[in-house]
Image (cartoon, rainbow, N blue to C red; front, side, top):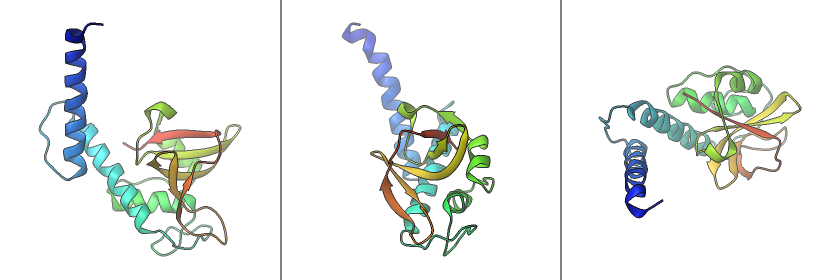
Length: 157
């Protein structure tokens, strides 16, 4: 591919990145076809910030906040504060997301931990292979490296 052939592709990527940057800082976007992508990015960014703000909150099975959480309770609470309603359990949340590849994951996407075909845990992707999550009884909401390859990714739209 010649340098001239790459220019449109680079311009398209720069335009998308600029639109997403504006969305992340609350700017207005009036670009056909990008508005829904930008609003999804804004929602995911807000949800990620909400989850991070709950750092240190104790885990409690069945809790949905605002002071205690289980894993899906944290994701439900975070996205609710960002303006999107999710179902209660990790498995139900997985079924409501747009499934994406690990290569396509972005900060704010959901990370679903599974054993075979059963989803048993969920967190919010924070970038660099890490998630915000409510791990287990006796633990607290925290940022942690993804510890297994048995994960699926989902994007809330």
